[in-house]
Length: 270
Ligand SMILES: NC(=O)c1ccc[n+]([C@@H]2O[C@H](COP(=O)([O-])OP(=O)(O)OC[C@H]3O[C@@H](n4cnc5c(N)ncnc54)[C@H](OP(=O)(O)O)[C@@H]3O)[C@@H](O)[C@H]2O)c1
Image (cartoon, rainbow, N blue to C red; front, side, top):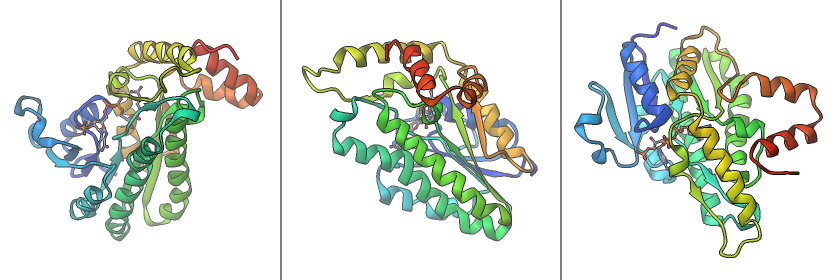
């Protein structure tokens, strides 16, 4: 697939991985559309010339449907936008879970469904789901986020087998720790006087430190570009957090041992 003359929609292009990807794709000659919950808020000085900024709140099903006409025309959809959430499993409010799954799973799934008829008709298309390595390596107090990214990966991996005969390829990219400042935007839930408070604080401290020392969003964007431009994109890409080492260890170590390694990397003794 040629990299120029592609029309690409990258959700969540206002910061981090999405912003790096929008810049990279624009530099390669693609027609790029991106989204924000509040595009008016983006100052002209921060907008990339030629890029169209559309309104999208993935947590709002009407907002997703409203992009139907735009999405019908695209060659590539990168489902990048997402919410990072933390909190003990026992204390996660149901409205927070609801919003997270609309944002990280149901919104991206619906957006993909809206893009597919056009892609199938044109016999080419690429959909990239930005997952998280936490889906492969679950971590305490991140259960909702882990589950949302695992769900997205499950949808993508099964749907890939339905769509590849039409020249449409779905891939998952799992980033590890990436220095985007996402920790500052993470939604955090913890009850007052929670018995989990100390454990959560330890985990968050290590998580944020890993992210601060993480790789650049440009490195993830380059992996996404590789997936977009491959003739037959891989089912799965992992980038950051010394990947592929953790995946090699996962193959050889017992499940429980791997889980304890992940916990210890975040300061939790199990
Ligand atoms: N950074 C990491 O270490 C890391 C690791 C693994 C996976 N990831 C995943 O990589 C993706 C990008 O992460 P990032 O670090 O670049 O995050 P980020 O800098 O916080 O960017 C998130 C983007 O998503 C958009 N967004 C947030 N909530 C939204 C909603 N409800 N509807 C529509 N758009 C929404 C934001 O746009 P507006 O605020 O303008 O709406 C923003 O552009 C996410 O899916 C994240 O889960 C990140």
